[in-house]
Length: 239
Image (cartoon, rainbow, N blue to C red; front, side, top):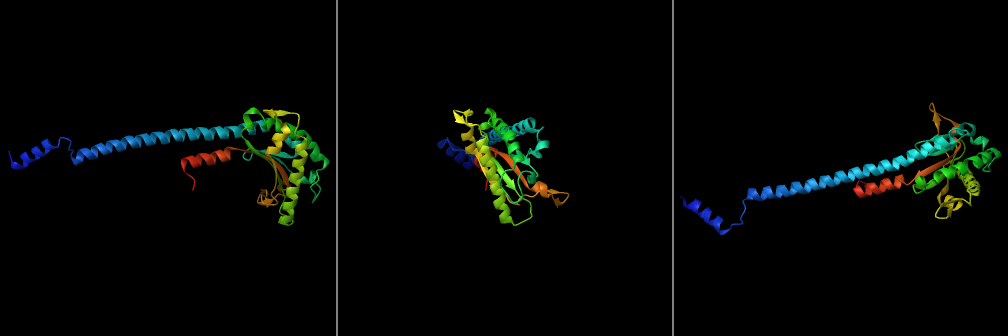
């Protein structure tokens, strides 16, 4: 037996815990694979959970839209109104029949529409399956591109505010919606008036439709948007 081989055997006998570099790398690689597998499994579970949450939020929006169509679909023609699935809004068009030019006082036709529409609208969106998801009910006023932007902003805001004040009077103060909260109190906590002037015009065949640009919308804003942001935060995907 050579002296070199004898020396290696002696060193191995003196340190029985000694591992070769290859053995150490194999052990570290095994640990790394285990950690990576655990991490991938966690990411997969989080991804599946996130998909379910997103689907739940989108399902609420779909159900609200279906209920809006079911409740008001037959009324939209006589109201000159349209229901928008993307915005969850009911758009009342041709405001020339609802307001006098340059004025924010409600005409009789609009009062008649709101008397019919708003109580039914409130009963729909305060259903048990929707109420907790409603973040805001926006009453939005819009103008066409004619006239000064600032003047149109004042007018669209004034019209939205006038409608809000009128609707509050129709909010059924004797109706309880949740833990003794009245419909009127709930409405005051959710309703907002928003003027947009001519910032969101409606075009048809490349030309502005002035009648459609002048409009009032009731738009439901759910908490889906804020929930999405929370999900992105948890995944650290936001900038």
